[in-house]
Amino acid sequence: MRTVECLPAARLLQIKRVAMFDGVSESTLATLVSTAVLQEFDAQEVLAQEGEDAEACYALIRGLVKVVHRQSSGREHIIHMVSEGATIGESAMFRQKHWPSTAVALEKSLVLRLERKAMNDAARQDPDFAVHLLGVFSLRLRMCVKKLSNQGINASQRVGRYILHRAIIEDKTTLRLKMSREEMANMLGITRETLSRVLSRLVGERILSVQGRIMTVLDMEALQNLADQE
Image (tube, rainbow, N blue to C red; front, side, top):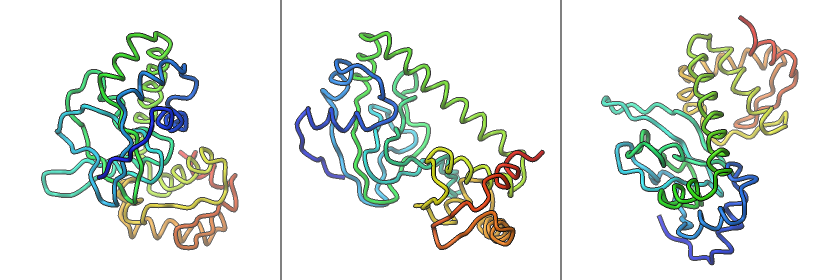
């Protein structure tokens, strides 16, 4: 990890690129970046280690980060992937004292490290920001519940829902996946072999076109039906 030197005005510009802070007042953003640090991590470097003190959260400016839980057996379970414009560990800034999971850069990544004290000060000083955070955490909880509900569905639906979600969020039919198939399978709770079989079937049914890590949705309606089926 290396620290990237920059002026407060530059850090202010960077935080405005992060979805979580969209609509937050200039004065509150200034409080948040007053002690913030811009950091660059190489691929496979750890940003935060499960169990360590959670003294800051991270806004991902550039790159890709995986958030994982490492089991006692040494096996790694991917909780989710964090891409540009998203945040890591913001929920640990208020009540939790330790990181609940481990964050690892998958490629060279630039992050804005936001200190716990600055987050707490901003929430105390700006009631609108505190309410805004409640909305963010509510959305995170909804996403968590949705992920848990996916545990009871078959592999085809899990794959279909993930691709559909990406297509809707990015408003694209052609998606470039930065993670490997093994990492994608891990995140969806299936084996790599099962993922390959599902993708092959979707290609055969002309729902998807797959070339390496590029997936193109050819039939959005069919993909929606797959994701919604009981």
